[in-house]
Amino acid sequence: MKSSRWWQRTLILALLSVSVVAPVFFVYHRLNLSPYARREFQEDISSVTFRTDPLQLNAIGQEGVEELEEPKEVVYKEKDFGSTNSSIQQKINDCEKSKIQGCRNNILERNEFNQDTRQDLKAQQKELFSIVEDENIFNTTVTHNQSMHTHSKKTADANVEVKDKKSMPRATQNHQSSRPQPRRVLNQKVLEIKDQIIRARAYLGFASPGSSSRLMKELKLRIKEMERALGTATKDSELSRSALQKMRHMEASLSKADRAFPDCTAMATKLRAMNQKTEGEIRYQQRETTYLVHLAARTTPRGVHCLSMQLTADYFALRPEYRKLPNENKINDPKLHHYVVFSDNVLACAVVVNSTISNAKKQGKLVFHVVTNSLNFPAIWMWFLLNPPGKATVHIQSIENFEWLLKYNTFKEQNSSDPRFTSELNYLRFYLPDIFPTLNKVVLFDHDVVVQQDLSRLWNVNMKGKVNAAVGTCQEGETSFHRMDTFINFSDPFIANRFDVNACTWAFGMNLFDLQQWRRQNLTALYHSYLQMGSERPLLKTGSLPLGWLTFYNKTMILDKRWQILGLGYDSDVDKNQIEWAAVIHFDGIRKPWLDIAMGRYRSYWTKFVEFDHPILQRCNLQA
Image 1 (cartoon, rainbow, N blue to C red):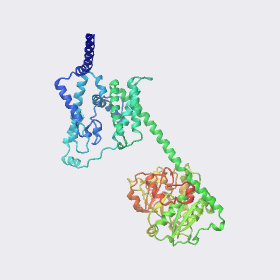
Image 2: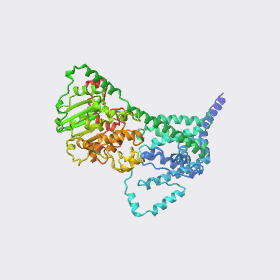
Image 3: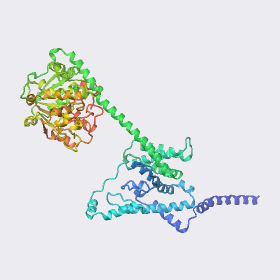
């Protein structure tokens, strides 16, 4: 009995000993490291484990320093393809580069150890040591904004770069070294994530339809993870730390796919096909965006339409004796400063009047003439009854009251669907002497301008016999730059013989007109002749600007551009300093400040002159 127990205990102890010793022996036999290799491997592991600088660890280690691109290698040469997209070529080069990066990730991840053979492990360790050594050299030698590409194998491109640097004049080298080092690209990691997703999808395209291999499932999972990690981020600072970890996992998966699909030529063909498809989708989206933006520019916002309807109802609810505007005796006084606005937009007229008055030193000398159509006449009239302009005077007229205009019969249907070009209000500016027969000078405003300074100095400008004073758009290099042939057909002999294509152009928006000189030179009749010729043959593009260039050719005095800054309705890069010191800012273009498509960075210059706490504005849900 005792002997059987003794044997049982001996057997149990033997089994326990085997279970403890066998794994150790198995791992040691599996690795089969020589003393030299084992010591080298231990040194490498200890250096990674006990480093105090987290910026040097793997992919996370490169977050805090300026990113260095690895050297580009020539993977293949293909003469059948002509000019290839530069981004596609970069993807092709990355196909080879991912092999090196995959080796690094395979060594660092534990689950990859047991899958590699003894020979692969030694080769990967040597490659890793060479890569780490090269990166250390890079970090100590790169001190300026030139991106130095080095590799353990010296390629021909690297030799050419060294020769060019040696042959460069010393003065040029000193100049380049004195340049300030640029900031690190803020969206480098975001772009890398997008590139990884593209590469993963390209690999999925190589698989046969319905394939359910382990690698394909892994790539699909990595793509979903990366898309969730990326989200709506556009900068590296918006990425989470888990996103960087998932980047390493994705790179490991891509290295597996790279070994499974080593044909880089097939990868290039696939990426080109994806690139062409994506470019086609981009062009389609751009066309759709352009169409929708132009459609939004042609429509009236619901809040503005509601305001017009509410004001119209209030106007007709008033008794006639309560509809009179103050200071009617000033509207024909030529000694005062008369401003003219042609508009069918209540809020736009209100901003022009409010901004001019708030910056004027002598408000009693201001007279505003608002000309509109019969549909919006009651609303605009009611607005200024509810919001009187203080000491200034407002005079409102309807185009239907100009019976003399019928004899001209010039408002024909224009070849355009844009109401900015088809509206009769757009062409009334050529009849200023007839609309205001008692006035000598007027300043014409477009209804999309905002006045920021006192304009009394403008009335003292010596026009030197010119009819029109306007800000020029003939400065080459500026966004507002236009040549005469931009809107006028200089292939027509009549135009080519009478006008200089290089003559200085100018802009509507804020124009000072000498009506006396206008009448003496009978420019309205000249305008009619050009309008008639334009209807008979393709002489000019639709709109009042080319007609103005022809009518006031050699009759326009160019003002300093500080009087009016253009481009706030289409240019997103107007200098803020220029906006601040401009007397008038003009939201020319389709992105008007009262529309939802307005540029947010400029809209506050317009909204600060709208009283959004007004009850009628709140009733129509109009907000800043």
